Image (tube, rainbow, N blue to C red; front, top):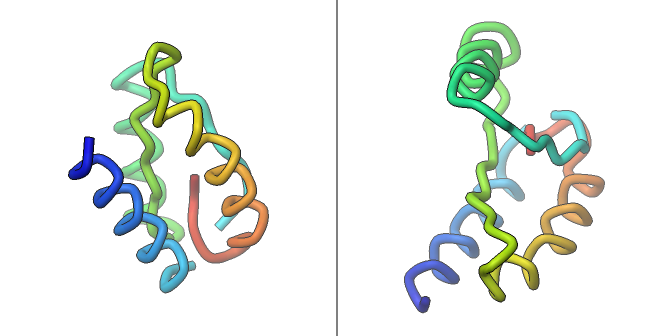
Length: 80
């Protein structure tokens, strides 16, 4: 659990340094994920912030509103 929180904080720090649209996307397939990663690596160059979420995970539910808020704050700087 500690390493999950540490990774989350690292991702948040990377988002603060980086550059995208303030939308939290819900990716439903590996194809959709691969397509999005390719688009942003070849076309926009924006960093992609990934949060692996589960409804059964308490810390995931706790951090979700923070990710949504951060996505709004990072408009034009990162893709969520």
